[in-house]
Length: 209
Image 1: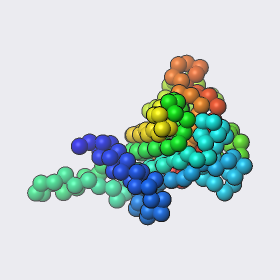
Image 2: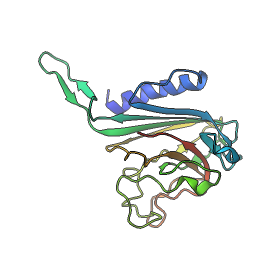
Image 3: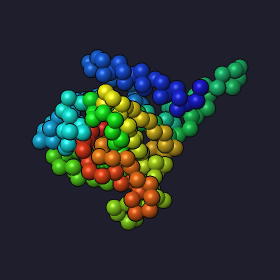
Image 4: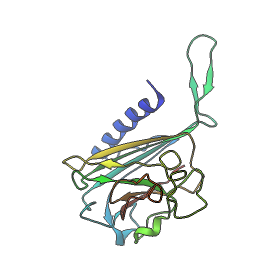
């Protein structure tokens, strides 16, 4: 089983458990996860998940986001077999998102952003980019793409549930990835519209490593 498939299965199981039992203990380092219920934007100073559009993201909706930082000091993989020992795992970042209770049959654009959530939608700043586009706001597919950013677009089912995952061969710069923003529609990919997904309808603070 590949690393991504294994982690997806593990985190998906953890997501379902966390949603069913919010008091479950947090997974150990190098995991980060957030499980919360959306609150009105006016409560952004104390809430980790806020909605700016209750028709698309009701206050009854919940979100689970997990990050696994792979590689670096202390992260080794055992090859197996006599005398083979250990080797370093590939460096990268795995992010998993699960939502419940959103508007049914709707495609949301979802991305990691650079600043924390606030009472206004623009508080969360621009998308996090591994290689920063010198021209902002970034709409150039060379920079605004799912390999240079973290995209977690979701199409919900009839019950408003959905999930997405992203595997990147790089890691966040410390302190520069602070939130996940849910947008009104699917993420664009064409020149001049790349990375754009309409109004910001909700935001979740995540302490990415």
